Image (cartoon, rainbow, N blue to C red; front, side, top):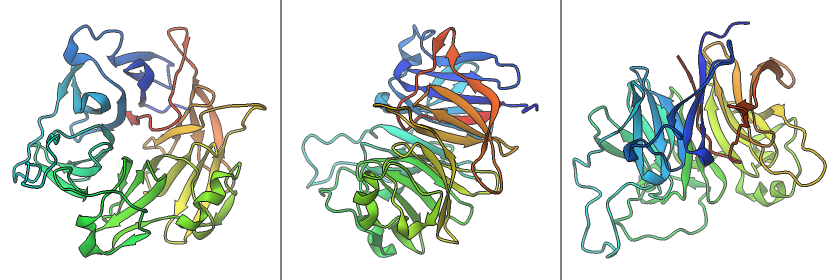
Length: 338
């Protein structure tokens, strides 16, 4: 079958973004190493990817603390603007504080064209407008004095602005206004809606049990499961929510309305010690799922099925320029576009 699009993904350890055409098999490094003699074109751990409304690729350049737009083969850093001064130093701000936004990770383009970005070491999620204006969505800015305690299972709307989030990474938004994101350090999946507040999708009481469990069930109630290592989130063309669990080496569909999870992809772990799992997943407009399999070093297509686990396609990428694809355990960027 012909797909008519390309799959883009980040090789974080190699500091580059790769474009792969499943139809032809052509592979190109579109940004980063090795063609990055200019310091402004160098990545330091490129993370999330997203296409803006104009079709330009956005890259979260994590350790350079910037978001880049790729235009005509060149990276341009987005200029971010704190128009209301909410990140400015205050009388109780720590002396070492800098207003710089640290470590962008997850990216998601909203229908209006605004960009949602999680900043893992700033402990915030921002909405970024076309002119660079920043709007704080979740988390507490570091110019406020606060500390992390136990992860609250539920936070009422009035208390959300005074609730820290600890290491946000992957982020997506449903058309009903609900934002879903991974909070990396406590390894939880959260959802936020302005009128309903902030909560954890999965019961925190189940977390310890499933860290010791070798795999997720084929189907279960949401209340009977907790991810061991949530890797990434994605929405398919029908806005169904999916999560990769790296430790359980699977992809789960999360049906929030029915409070049910269903396992749609399960990798087979080899005998003996093995690392990695499924680090990220994205969907083409045709519904095909494209998976970054960090355990085997493969970019693989899957055809969704209404029942049972999905069928792998013949399109798979294992080498770039004769060298194996190298993917991190979790948190790679993947996006589908022209």
